[in-house]
Length: 112
Length: 116
Image (cartoon, rainbow over all chains, first blue to last red; front, side, top):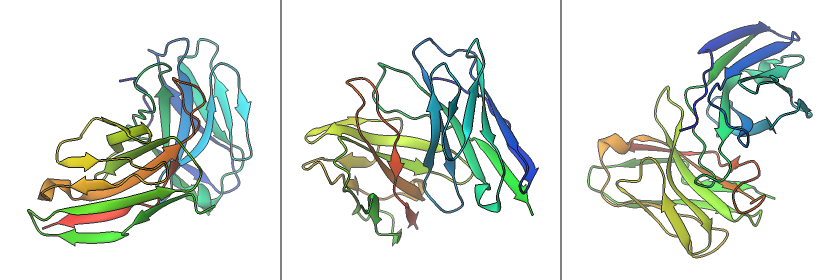
């Protein structure tokens, strides 16, 4: 299994930036880094993914360390709706197709 | 598009009963999968399919059967329900970027199953 390590929980105030870290020291050169989040009582939803370069989309930014052993999901202005469990997942290219190993993720609490 | 739909939303079974959880997607995705999520845990893969007529086992396949006769549907069958199968079940689908990688997965809203 491709391993990632995330803090169990983090807190933020509304409208402040949030930086969610993920360590993946055993990542290989072709592994994609994906982030999903799961809002309460819902299925997970895709947030963002990257391979080597930093990535931005309408939901978040993904900053990938130069050695790729860690990455950070950045929510630029947290809202109450961003309170969720965030999962950092490695997609091992060429392995059994589509196996997502979720782990326990980081529970993000956003305070008004 | 409705995306990924699952029925039923809730189900209570007695030990030994069988049932089928339904999953459908309208995005023409080749890849579909079933996960279970136990309280306080991440999701674990039960079975998956890379196209109609092709299925394979994930991490926790025991006690479950699947088939994929169409691109749209991927039902999950519980053969003889046990209390250990009490969980929330999520179905997901994704398009294939190439032979070895997928695009992002889309998840359904889940089925909450209780086995007494």
